[in-house]
Structure formats: structure tokens, C-alpha cells
Image (cartoon, rainbow, N blue to C red; front, side, top):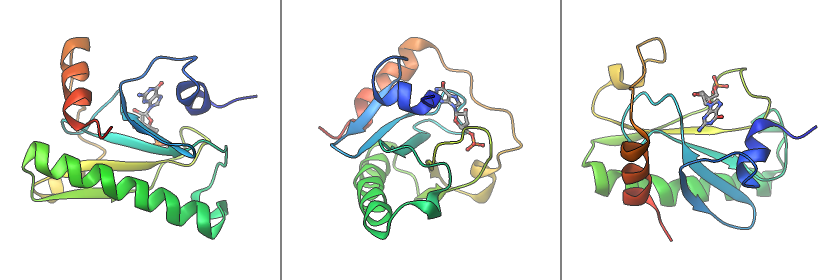
Length: 129
Ligand code: 5GP
């Protein structure tokens, strides 16, 4: 059965798309820690990121880098954190989170509540294509 992230990449479940190519898909996290919090996934389903092949993993990081560069320009943040954690969705994903200090990437803090309009504007700003 397809994971929720596969359904998102296939357009069966809507998402605020940030970037896409043949092998990877990036979209805004629905429970963002910061404006622009983005998830990057491989289109090929794999639960654990280190079960990807070397080439798949390298390609995913390269794809994430292009998005992080955009996020840094758009949000003027000090850095973009690249974080892999969590057991919630069994589909490998990288969190890309614009940050100015370590507290910005504390997953225990309350998430931002954004409107549909706000999500759309943010995704549009980052969109690489
Ligand atoms: P993790 O496994 O990294 O702990 O959590 C998965 C992440 O995916 C969470 O940050 C959660 O907010 C996000 N997420 C879960 N379901 C959806 C969804 O349907 N749409 C989007 N955009 N994000 C989701």
C-alpha cells in the first residue's frame, strides 16, 4: 500500500509543492516549525533513508541543497537545517527548516498555525522551477 507521502507525490493527496524532478518531490510540512519548513522525499518508497542506494541518497541531498539555497535567499535566515528523524511516516524524508538559532528546530515546540493562503504564498516563494 502506498504511503501518504507517495500519495502526495502522485497528486492523490494535495500538498503545497515546492519542487519536483523525476526522482524526488518537495512540499511544505503541514505542521511547520518555521515558515518554509519543507519535506523532501524520494519518489521510490523506502522507509529508512539509509536503505536508499548511494546514488539515490546523493541525489536526494543534491535536490535538497537546491531548495535550501532558495529558502536561505527567500527567508534571509542564517542557515537551513537539514534534519532526518521521526518514525511517524514510513517513507524516508528530510526536513529542511530555515533557522536563526537552535530553538527554531526544536520539534517539541508548538507548530505554526498557517492559513491555506499563507501556505500557498510560502510555497510559491520557494518554488524552484
Ligand atoms: P516525522 O516522521 O519526521 O516525525 O514526521 C513526519 C512529518 O510529516 C511531520 O512533520 C508531519 O507534520 C508531516 N506530515 C505528516 N503528514 C503530512 C501530510 O499529510 N502532509 C504534509 N504536508 N505533511 C505531513
